[in-house]
Image 1 (cartoon, one colour):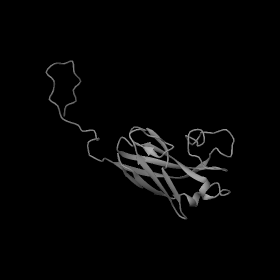
Image 2 (cartoon, one colour):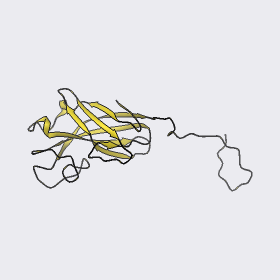
Image 3 (cartoon, helix red, strand yellow):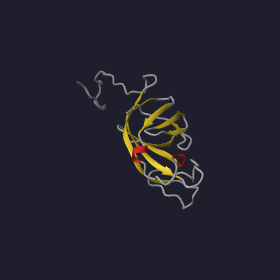
Image 4 (cartoon, helix red, strand yellow):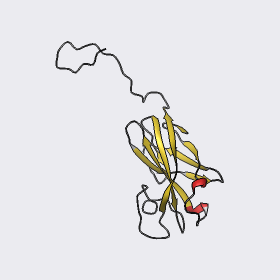
Length: 159
């Protein structure tokens, strides 16, 4: 399970090499597109890592917090806090890797024009859970018991 904190950078260590799809290219020609789905509101965030290091048994991915997210630069903003699911898709390049708009797919179903300079989504290599905790403890919804209104034009949920 990946653990992160809202409004902070984080490093994820995930297993990708055991399920590698495009073995015809070197590891330096591979990046991973991550799809994060919030369990509560079903919002989806796509992102490539700011920095990615593929090792023999795992891949290290560094993501940066930013109030203005940029999926290609690894800048993300996870809200609300809570449980998220992640899926990692392998993206490969034949020529120089360029994680940028028009050169890297933006979703797992995005197909770019055929070019050795454009990335191709090879498929899903791993998935799992992620927990994003709150940095300050103020983002959770807090419920307060209210007194019953004196008039009848309000919706009231009592005990």
